[in-house]
Length: 114
Image (cartoon, rainbow, N blue to C red; front, side, top):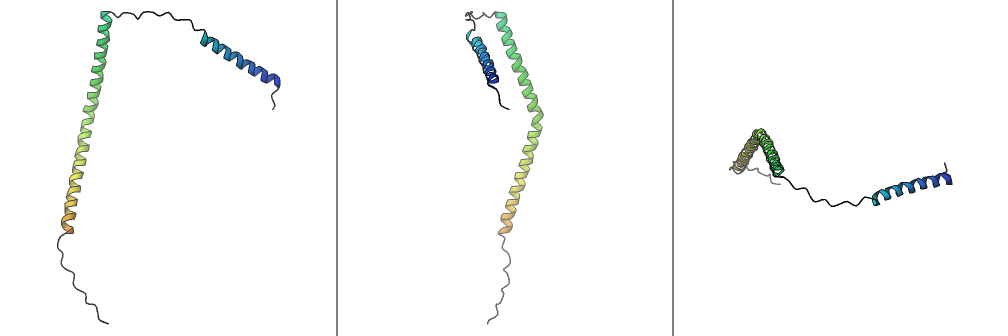
């Protein structure tokens, strides 16, 4: 399907109008007046610090609870790895001792003469 010249012109005109609208919106932002920052009242300042301290207490409590719940798992994993280390060490000692025990000499095999 070939587009006609009329369809292409119509499409390019629509893109041109759309881009013109966007550029006008970006360019015509009203100059903003610089307003002085509002002064905070002592009650607002106290409320802000009350909110900060409350959020820190809640986060600390949640962290403590997570640590309290996970501590038995951490201790259990520590004990399992500790026992595995003891078993490995005993196994290494056993291998070392049994490898170097003097064994009875093998009986000599007489090789028949030719």
